Image (cartoon, rainbow, N blue to C red; front, side):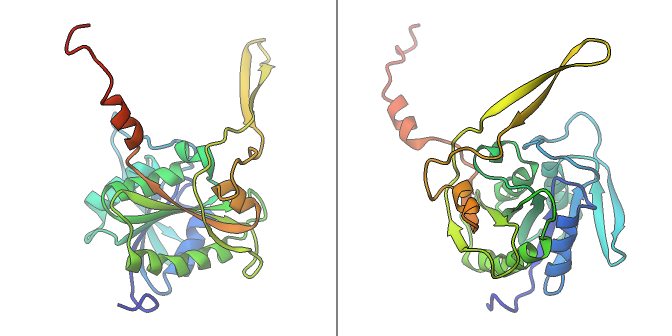
Length: 262
């Protein structure tokens, strides 16, 4: 199988809504060589994590995108979109799911909150190869170079494979092609951001809070995802859905639980 010429069956989704420019940039670039379907939220769903919809019906509406693409807009979360696409809307199911391109990096502890990451994780739980893609910027966004890197990476993921339950978290510097420092296969940082709440009063003298944080923590290790990104590397981190701490599991098995007497 040739990684350069094989046409892939790809699902695109995100957490920024179906009309987000990062999603459309991916479609423009990937659809040149691959069969691409879009199933994405009908509105922004940033920072919803891995939530799913259980208590009201999901609706999927076909919409036209840029006049040359048809997508499904879903009134749910990114994880909902992947579930609905895999189970109902795509037959055959996708070979690869790509979530993004998210404006703003998703590194370190942000993986726990990101809807972009959750969509890739949902696909990995179904045994589908997947990646979450984010761009390190919130303005003057250079989506096209990032999309072209994803187009380069996508066949490599399919040809080389990933273990079931593992997906890639990809963060790209907001730079033109040829300006990045290269690719760094990195690990997820666990350093916490310096967080704060700004306390304010509304016109009726009721207290409310705006949550905020510094732009990045002081990373402990040079091979952390955020540290690599700050050094202008494209960061690729393999992430597992299985959150079991196997080393601690074996230690806890040795605890004395009292044989039923407590």
